[in-house]
Length: 416
Figure 1 (spheres, rainbow, N blue to C red):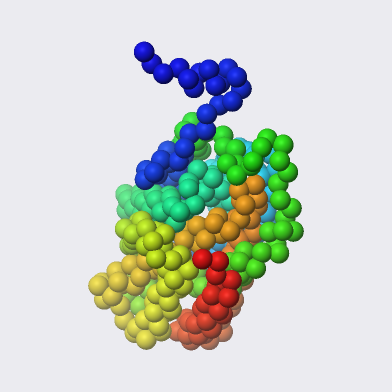
Figure 2: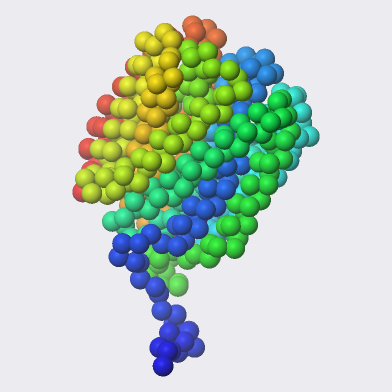
């Protein structure tokens, strides 16, 4: 006889909640990882070519690229992440809100075909594409934490980020192969990017079930007010640290442009720089997450930024880059991502009540997005004014000071 107890409970209107598996990662996290893998193949096919396309192909200035990069990494997240997060919490429809964001980004890959090489239209399409990311990021991360026990937050986020990094690794390779086969055929890259984006939307739609916050004590229990979250010193410290450190972070595109200049790498090989970074991210993401859950998330998070300062020091002193030096710098960048991105979201998830999880994550993401926006524009301006060497030194010093402030804030609000 098959056990029919769960059927009887469904008939009584009391469905049995599935407990968290003791060690396994939730299928929801894996499905979201598949969605991110496919979407990142699409996104990184475009992102890995933007610096070379804008600066080397269109011959625009570093400042003009800084504006585009700021839009790509910061503007849209800051603009819509909060609204999307609060909406998802209010209606408990994280999946549906995320679907809308993924769909917008997929459509933008086709729009790149229409705008051609016009700088203003490229800005518009990049901004719209990042609006999609701003809509989807917080609901997706909320779904990860809402389907994971608190003690394994960093591990779950690290598994998702590892799959995400796998897409970041494959995207530039696909772009490189397409351009190697069809030199200068950026249109072919945009079309292939659209196909992968559609597959990512399909994976989310088909494999991720709708989710209801697990933390609600009853169907009618009111969610805690947002003001209560904003009164949490720990939450404010996390949001402040994320924003401050993002403000002093040099965009990857500028790092790659500096490495390309120092190594003399041909423009056609530019997408492969992203591959080495994504490889480091993918390889070290899960070990970093496990270490964070076991020994302390704040230490791993701050250690990741210490590694980034080391990379900036190398960029400042390095006159010419051999292939081993180039690979080493890119792997350092990947380790930095492995130790910071998912770990910060795990720290935030442990602080934010489930009923406000999406909106709280969106607040943290908004601060980071604004920091990246101003950082890209500022670094592009400094590059034009004093050159890349001195600019990276300024940012390294600023990040060192920001790291000291972040250490003080996190230690003063430590709840462990």
